[in-house]
Length: 161
Image (cartoon, rainbow, N blue to C red; front, side, top):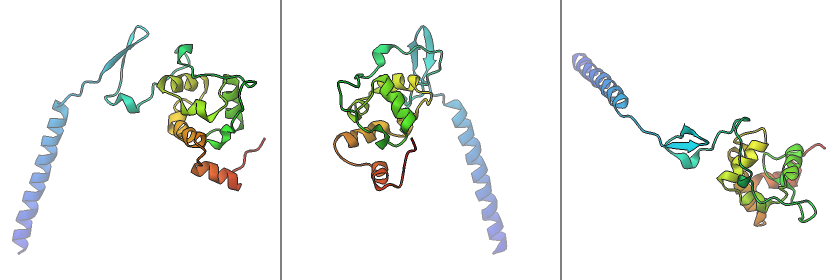
């Protein structure tokens, strides 16, 4: 019986090692071509799933003002409490207000270009997507609550002035 177990173990180990070698060989033979995007006279290679990735913006990149969302002035709009969105505190709300962003409706309407423009004005690239501002603002604009806004209303979360 022990002899039979030893034989089976040997063949299973050999099959495992052979599988690893073949898998490694196939992995190195297959090359995935990534789409290229021409951006300001330079070629940028994007990942294959471009819809789920964000454009990395460096301080030296110039983001066109045409990418800005619809901006408002404080005198023409009733401002929402943007701190009800997870990730926006007092200082970030003030910065958004300085940019002309006052309402949940504005944030809910952000497209990729708007997000890139706002990210370039903030020093936290990718924060809008990471924290789901657009989804939260959509819910809040429709009069619904988010988990974060419920906790804020209950007093579990507070912002110091």
